[in-house]
Image (tube, rainbow, N blue to C red; front, side, top):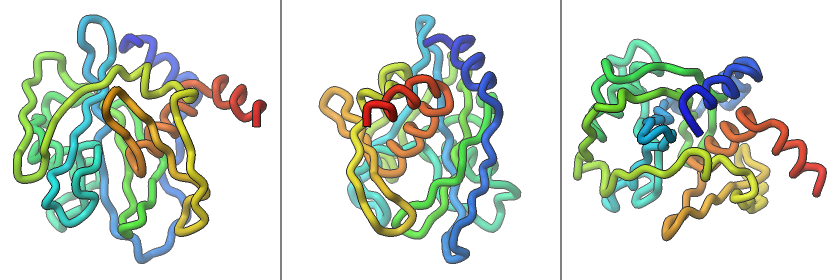
Length: 197
């Protein structure tokens, strides 16, 4: 999937309303869904969190984190955290859009911002927070046929998604956000797979 194809599809189906009604006890957080065009194909940048972290240790995630008092907006939160975690300069980020708020079981509410990264931007993982930095082809992880759901009747979820990629397993909030992005970019696939159930 190219940058132009993604933009056409993302913008064709209108913008999403980011806020959804959620309990007030949830703490605000934000992530970037960073897209990097390499050799004419969009790559999704992901991290594997360090194993010693308090929340979601060892999981595959987007760069981001909780809002701090100095953050003027949730987008500022996502930019600050991405710079800390993967060395992504805020000047190398081009906003594309925002997805709906995503609650997680650790009592955070994540706002995902879809962005393009400048192709020449070097990235480096902060070993204190990130065990590994890697990319996956966006088209592959957005294909709903590759998504598996586990029904879970607790918190705000009716299901938890899992997206296997090579030797990795993307799951939880990261997979849920990718599923929402996939449903927005490929609504025709969403209708097709629902018709099979």
